[in-house]
Image 1: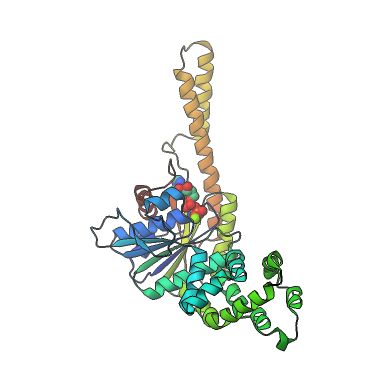
Image 2: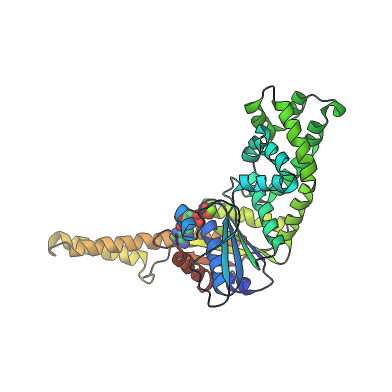
Length: 381
Ligand SMILES: Nc1ncnc2c1ncn2[C@@H]1O[C@H](COP(=O)(O)OP(=O)(O)O)[C@@H](O)[C@H]1O
Ligand SMILES: [Mg+2]
């Protein structure tokens, strides 16, 4: 039998400084991150939630209306236990710009920000959003204003991106391409030669803007990057180590559906391979029936029974309504059983991974009251 994920203990433990919610798109990562942050705040912690793509109504109810990349205090949090909640919505372009601004004087920064090569890179580089989430996490943790940071992760195409992005971007900025671009004469390679050398991630960005100005812009930008971002790889690596440290807990979020659980399996294995501290799986939007003692077979039989009576003797619609209700009950029981089988498939493949379940709510979770319910379901089943 799989262990129960004790999220309350993790939230309450002062040694827990970072909780990362990951998983495939649409499974409830943002909701879970916000719910954990709120619960932690209302249990006395100074919590900060770093969200990536909150649904608009949820963002509004958390006061996340401006994209200024600064955590803002969330109103409506119960202050009784002395905790507080801040929340921030990540704007990756803004984070990129901030790094430039922090590393150079205002005139030079303005020049770089206006450089078409920079604009293209900062918005089109695959993995930039993932990288920036890591960069921002490093900054927030370093600021040390919060004792718990809860991180939502971007809706990556692949679960890999999140862990690979820091190194990929670090490698890119510290790597050969930069050296080649900053001194093509020395290396003896033409700019087109560089393009042909297989830097495919740059190719599409560059072909879009290829023109007389490109090489000059590229060189200006890259020279600047080279001096400013010298510590890029070190920062990426220190954030990576921060994630591996004992104060971090990863939770993988999934819905009880084949694709989401397959992705969750993959994520669990990947975190293990990277020696990242996995706390467990959150199975979100689980369907449970309030009348689970009435089996599928019995409710279907009762429905048939009612329907056949309806044909002959019972007047009015009441038995038809009852039969429909029984059929709906049978369907929801079947859904619950299918979800249970899928969950068991996951737990038998990963018996050491603790699991917490959150029931599907009748409506989307778009305010603090809804988040409070999710937090409660997560922590007190
Ligand atoms: N337990 C739940 N019950 C009902 N709706 C939920 C639940 N968890 C999340 N949702 C809803 O599902 C949608 C996707 O959730 P979200 O947290 O944005 O997913 P992700 O960040 O993984 O893409 C949102 O509309 C959210 O309100
Ligand atoms: Mg999300």
